[in-house]
Length: 167
Image 1 (cartoon, rainbow, N blue to C red):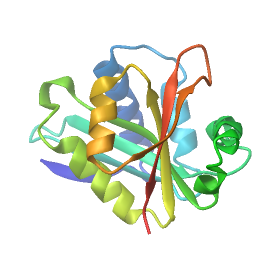
Image 2: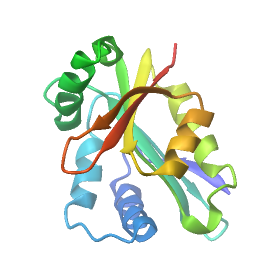
Image 3: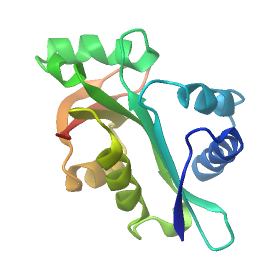
């Protein structure tokens, strides 16, 4: 297996979007255009892990979080009320981390996450995960992420906000 960069490769980014939908068993018409749009954001970093047959088995990407971006503007009030607003000052926003169900627990997610964050030039990183996603919560906490806020409702479902110091 090998890791490939997503930056500047719209064909691979679209394949990553298809992998995302297959892994999560969802069908969103806007996912590929969203992945491509995000790849143009400042500080974008994206990686996929491919198997011997060149099939994607893992995906991770994010970018520098800036005012005016959708999720940055959702996180700001939640972190402000929790006295954690400084986390957004020089921040890498982890947007997606997905591993194929058939290979979860094999270290692919950890390897992708570590390589992505090592390349990020920012001081901190933030992410959100569903409050009921026990596997993801365990994964992030085992990988050094700190809970910044629980019971965050950007939409109708509860999420948690996690942060990690990078530098």
